[in-house]
Amino acid sequence: MNEPQVKLLLVDDEASLREPLAEYLSRQGFAVEQAADASKARTALQDDIPDLVLLDIMMPGEDGISLCRHLIEAQNLPVIFLTAKGEATDRIVGLEVGADDYVVKPFEPRELVARIRSVLRRANKGAPAAPKETDAHYAFDGWKLDPLKRRLTDPEGTVVPVSSAEFRLLLAFLDHPRQVLDRDRLLDMVQGREAHLFDRAVDNQVSRLRRKIEQDSRDPKLIQTVWGGGYRLACDVRRIVPSVD
Image (tube, rainbow, N blue to C red; front, top):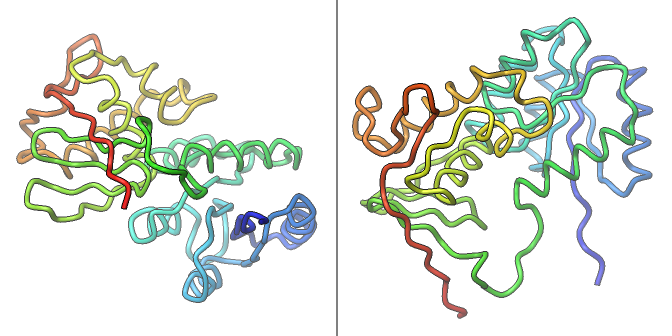
């Protein structure tokens, strides 16, 4: 039985790049929907939800940063930015709002395909097999995280939405409870590749995660700052293997 095609939404106002890139990605086995700007992308999202969005930063009208924030907060979709060489500041902002990766124009399409597959693996795309130890849910301080569904619930059982970057950051802490994780290690776990160039990105991600799981994000009890060292999850974590129905 063939696996379903991975669906991509390619958003770029430059048709001379967008159209041949869409054709190349289609030949690589992806189902590609194109949008020339953020407005058309929002319309496309009403009809179908992709597995990943390839998003240009500089576009007329709504820019890629604004659309990325919507994609992550409202749709919780993985995003890879397509950026120009001179947009270093925008790349930093993009990573801070939760984008998963970026490629700099001009780029090799084969490199982009490798990045897409890497991001999808990190985002846990694909159907899981029968429950096993690695599929275990996490329980911590009354909270629960289902890593396969990326479903976070608070002590009252309310689902709390998390972005892709927030999910990976929380997972890094849950896999290393009570351990001090410095910024370089966290960035490597959460973003990979050249993330060490964006030291402040992890601080912003920690701040956003604190606003979601702390009673008072200004006085955090769960994710503690270790001055000169990094951050630490200051609670015990249990692993619960789900039962098979």
